[in-house]
Structures are given as C-alpha cells and as structure tokens.
Image (cartoon, helix red, strand yellow):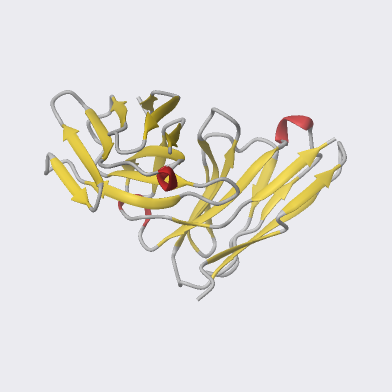
Length: 111
Length: 113
C-alpha cells in the first residue's frame, strides 16, 4: 500500500499547548519519514525527519515519535506559539526516488 | 542562491488552451518533481525526474507532460486544459531523491475557466 494516512485534518490548540499530529503507513519498505511545514502562499519546507532505526528525534520544540511495530509516527510541538500556525504534512519514502505525502493537518494556535 | 524558482505565480487559462509552467533550480540537484495541491487532498505527484533526459509518471500524470533537457530546468506542460486542472502546482528538487529533503518552489496558482 502506497499510502500515508494523516490525522486530524485540522487542530486548534491554545498557546503553550502541545499539538500532536499522527500518521500511519502500511508498507514496511518505507524507510524515511519527513515532516513538512507550509505557511499560506508558500511552498512546503522540510521541518524534521526520522529514519526507522530510531524511536524519537528532537529539533528545538519539534519532536517526531516513531513506532515501527505499529507503523505509526507522530509530530509533537512543545510550547506551541501562534507562529506555528501552518499546515503540516507527514510523508514517507517508498523507494529511493520519491516520497508520498499525507493529506495535511491545518494547525491553528490561539494567542 | 535562489533555490527553486517557479513562473508564473498566478495564471488564468481558458478551457482547451495549453501552457507551460516553468521550474528551474540552481542547487545542481539531480531529482526534480512536480506536485499539485488541492484543498484537503495533500500533495499529489504528477511527474518526476531523476536526472537530465529521464522522466517518470507519478500518481496523477494524465493531462500533463514534462521534459528534462538540463539539470536545472523541469517544465510542466498542460495540454488542452480542463477545469479539473485548477490547482496550485509546486515544483521541488532534491539532492538524492526520496531519502533526502525536498526544496520546494513557491508555487503556481492556476485557474482554468
């Protein structure tokens, strides 16, 4: 299965809260799991990525948690800020040539 | 360093017309991609290229064509435009394909009327 299922579709969180976005995949051949952040009117930009040999990766306030046995991975944003309001895409690489994207989560952080 | 440059930023096309969306990158990346983004549907891969002279279909190639004559340029051709092709189109490039980050352009918003 060449799909990445992302949830929720939209999310509203108070400033300082911890939004969590979840993704699931079926193909065990996927070997690279990036997250992209997109602001309105802009192209997506790589935020953070993980490979299946680690269970967690942190970069600043952003953390990816990876559960290989459950074929799930998630993005956590610590101490969320209004400037984090954006659309977030998870993705996975089914082969060395390309990645496929989830449908995206629109995140809104209330001030 | 400009990264990935797309032109035009906006365009209105009439049904049945054709046009080319331009994409150029200055990072000497071998891999280049075209995606379309529709509300709530994420990013769908149209075509991609792993190097000059090599192209391959993605998930939604119908109604589009590409060419890759140089490392820098990867134009997307729309033939006989249809309303279903109304979308935002993004070009991206990567140093080494699926296992590395993509650099995206700022997009072309296309409306077919």
